[in-house]
Length: 320
Length: 183
Image 1 (spheres, rainbow over the protein chains, first blue to last red):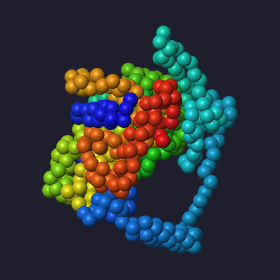
Image 2 (image 1 turned 30 degrees about the vertical axis):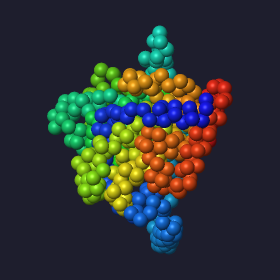
Image 3 (image 1 turned 60 degrees about the vertical axis):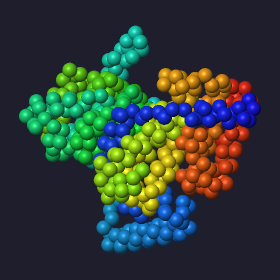
């Protein structure tokens, strides 16, 4: 191909018709921006956003100095505060208590072990590692039934239960149509029928899950946002657009941050194990109100798929 | 792009920002598709670009340069998207030309397949420079303003990009397919 021919074809190829951004993407974007605060100009520029000054397009030479000065100031302030706190002996760093369970603890709820507050388990990236790192009381009895297409339809995990339960986790799938499910669940309890009405004493968080084929729509995010003002954990499957939006959503709106990332939900039911690991003091194998993969997860934990909405209510009514 | 809309958006006017975004979204998407090659990744990049635009709009000193500023945000979003997908994608399959494009004769361009594969071997920065030049029709000086680099750098990127395409086109297709998508 000659040079002129290449230039010509490149121009033809790149200079094709304008593509149209799907309306759903725009609506999803506006849903996010409507709930995102604008950053002050200085903060935004310090964060690396180009300023595009009227006189020049180049970054100011003073910017690195300004950034360094601000960082030094912040560091000095932090050191000063830590020093004062330590001096006043107000900082108490206690080791996390361990789980006291017998290694042969049965799986029945009556003999459930007690998990103390503050216990933290590492959450390795892969399911296999995660399984190996489960505490000794964590028994996962797995029994797969598969369809002719190889899809597991009745994977069952027997999970230990914890008593007392200081608070509840609600597992909300944002896969497909959670809003309607939530409304059904709440309506059955005489609540107002909107997710915003959920205000459960002791509810410390909500686990969001996103299936591999998740394609979130604004409706799902509306439901999620209303429910997740105290989210502390998130799990997702392999990186995909759905999980990306969930992560992005949480990063923007979750004051507690994301307890762990992707990779722990590769297999059905692991979302529950993940939730336990993220916050064992506040976890109850709960409810999935979504569909698809997470619906199987609900079945894995013994939740009747047909009664997920009822069980949702059961969870949020747990005593604290 | 009306500067007053930008100013209103900078004061937190969502409606103004939506108008700005709607006015730019198709162009942003078209550029992102050409740079990233994948419609899904391009959608994500545009969304990220627009969200960052809203969040950091107050950092824009000159409302008249909103378009240029937006393209630079898009470049950053495309870089991030490329990093995110690099581990999963060994080669960037350029989006298929849709029916509308075929009507305009683009599908008939000879060697388009080779061109796509060769284009995917370029860095995001090179692809962006080529897309802004050939698709948006910006001159090197304007691209320099958009990307925040010197005009000479843009000229170099355009020159290198085309030269690299020539080199890649001369290679067997299998070498291109298994090559490093980033150069």
